[in-house]
Image 1 (tube, one colour):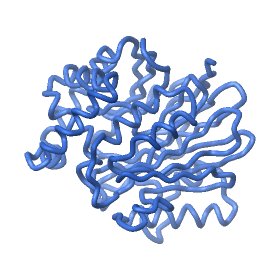
Image 2 (cartoon, one colour):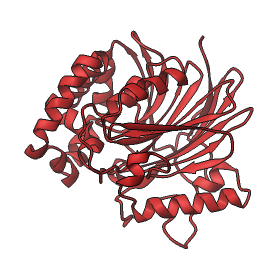
Image 3 (cartoon, one colour):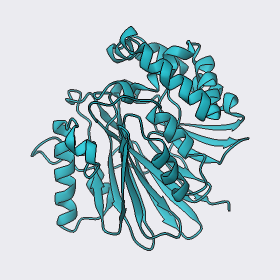
Length: 343
């Protein structure tokens, strides 16, 4: 079911990795050329100061994640841009601690776990983001929220294997990246289950910082995993929790990270609501309390230059993931449905 007034597009994409990338690129091409290329953040990411780091990550991606590299090549082709620039953009959180990737995740473990997520990003992409329903020739099927110019796997996704992913930026400092965190996020979507995603991140974590909330049908706990900077830490959550954009238990992250005012305020407000017994995902994620910066981010002068572009509620039932996507607070879902798993 979809809401015709939604600002979020929907693309069904099939084929091999390069085909998928081309389709993603063509869908986002206009918005990338109109809004991203003239932006200061695009220029900063593609500055020559980063060329050596980008070249190292490109070589490692081609060696260890060739399918993801093919998708990136297709993405560049669809965008009609050089692969070097497109790949650098998909390394933004590895190159800069202040990359504009926000987000808040509500985690509700239990017999029917719920993972709910505010996806916060560059405001000029509002109305140009889309859901990609992907059925690859290689790898597993999934549906993910996508930004123009970016591969899937760094926002939110639900899979045909009966597990879900919600991703938060961690602004780790003193990182020397060897593989892009967004490549790891995309590779995660090719895994059959949460345990294999965790194993992937335990092997590869020399990257910028990310937090994944991972839940799977039939498992009451939700795995919370923070990784990056050559380190990884995880917890199996059994009680309600909230995660914003800073490390809560990652050892090197706790020692060296940048916590923005927004991230601090969203974490504190979310923890307060949970402590008061509030567990309705939309009440928490659409909260706009005035004491500090709000969880729902709609301000034109947001200090992190981010706005909430979609809210997802993903419920892990016995036979698959029931989901709702909201692009306007107080309005009906932009999309809703159920993805039954294939095992």
